[in-house]
Amino acid sequence: MKSTIERLRTWDNRSQVHEPVDRNFRQAFSELDRLKTKLALSDAVIEKTAYIYRKALDKGLVRGRSIPGLIAASLYAACRNTETPRTLTDVANGINIKRKDIARCYRLLLRELDLKMPVVNPVKCISRISSIAELSEKTKRRAVEILDHAAKIELSAGKDPMGLAAAALYLSCVINGENKTQKDIAVAAGVTEVTIRNRYKGLKEALEL
Image (cartoon, rainbow, N blue to C red; front, side, top):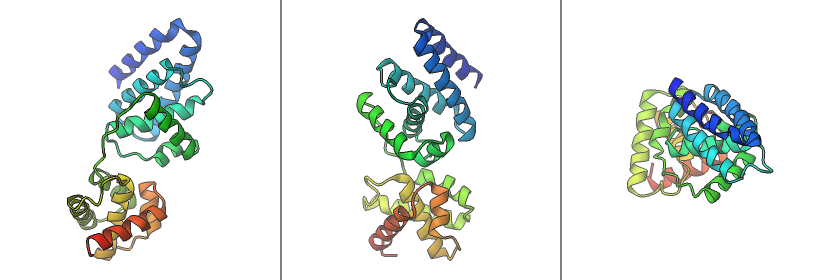
């Protein structure tokens, strides 16, 4: 963390030639520092967020937009880029901004900075959801099997990884008789019950379970 802080300070010092930019970056850094603790993020994610935000700042994308909104979008982009399982809802709750506002800024960053995001394997989301929802190892293992099968028949292509993982876990709960509702899983995953219901139906039919 110390080395990360030093690197960020170096960027901060470089920006001091332009006072408005300096003040902007200081405010953004303050928000970022708070989010790191709140969302339990790694140094790599924080550094990537600062890098993306700096690029947005240099391109003038902050003008006329809220600093917290853009830093939140940069953070979500960094999470996607580093395959860190945090949803837009997680970030929105962490910084107390509407999810749709962060999504709008995120789309702006993708478009204007030409960011390329890796496709996240939904299996990587299983552990986090299971931990929050307090699901059994048996349910967790079965959900991974369901997702592996779905990947083989290309059912997971283009689907939101967190939503798909949540649906696989709910399906696994039903199969194993584990007493968890769609709402329990939706809250743990940071997705809607409608998403789980739709993905659950698709998985059940395609895998004939």
